[in-house]
Length: 525
Image 1: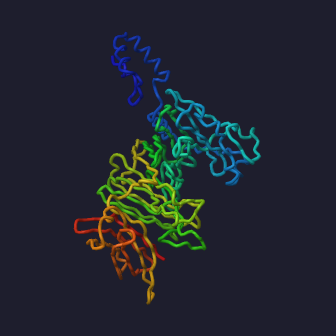
Image 2: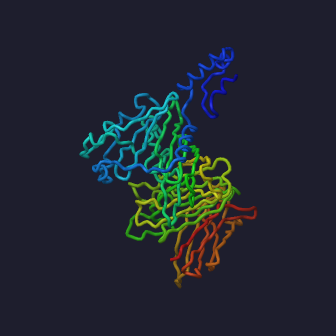
């Protein structure tokens, strides 16, 4: 009898080959005894399958929203008061173990009133990490510790020596619903990721699934990665997640997901990203603002399954704007902050030039679907008003496991770019016009290695497509002798002021395509 047959599929079996040889010579009774012993000890390590089983069982029951049970003193905290509650550094998980990673936890309060259960996985065993007011420094807040007992954490953050070996930087945060965000070397928080987006941008309203429990694997002393498991729950679905985090110049998170639907959903957004765009080079500030641009991301970048690269500059629309790109087996998509010139922002506090780009690389074949971009009007820079995600054509079946995987990259240096050339800026408006009219002026600048080696006499031309609602009055394509790139200048006339204009433009030479495709939307007004 094979000893390994005692273990279910997918269960970790930490047995060396020499041990298996010794077992082969033992009696059946001894083998059974050893198997039973392992079933009650760390031979069965906790892993993704365990979380998957919990998600499946949870989906088989009716959804039960956990009641908010925060003391009034926590519910009434303002933003600054909540930020004054800090996890004590000496209490960080693994602080005394001299491990490369450490964990700190968030206190409930303000917007974060839902319980999140936390666990450590070490040696195959699971240990719950319980909330204790003694873990926190409450600053100037006057809170009675006895009223805080029995609470749960709101989330957690991961620390790692990212920028210097002498200090463990914050590199990853899970806080609020299914939101999380990470940092690479020299980066500041900008775009965020989510576990799932449900019915985003629909009149019926959006559903926000949330992570209700996490399990964090204790790393080895020289570990370069950290594994985290999450259980997601919401009215219409549950999910099991595995995050393998690898901090670096560009921090990478490998994500594995298994979803179970309780009820059908209208629109399921996978690997969603959120960001902020207030104003920029293609949209001037409405008020009196000294800053030229304010945004965490300036465009949606897509690498299609056919090899085409697309770039859609972001905007802050007057009305909700939902657009999409139909694709099959996309290579990746992301909300990117391409502009890294401080002089284009002039904000010493926010440092938008250092905000992280978020890039999703698909794993396996995602099939047919669309990358959808939702842009929401925002009166200021405090709102994440941009969302992008993948919507599969084939909806998951009820109660059946639906799996997908992807890699999420947080980038600033060595960002993912098209190999030939790309758009570096899209500007709206005219230069000097002797006879001003109501036409629309657009300027698009392309740069990249394929253009850099060419001179001003190169046979580069622009390929332009406009929808039937626009008439092209002028188009000029010429060499940019300052950047070594190429510029396309357009002048258009909108035929129906109540309708949108869509445009596409790329560069080519006699040998073929020389750039990504600039894809732009001009909403009415």
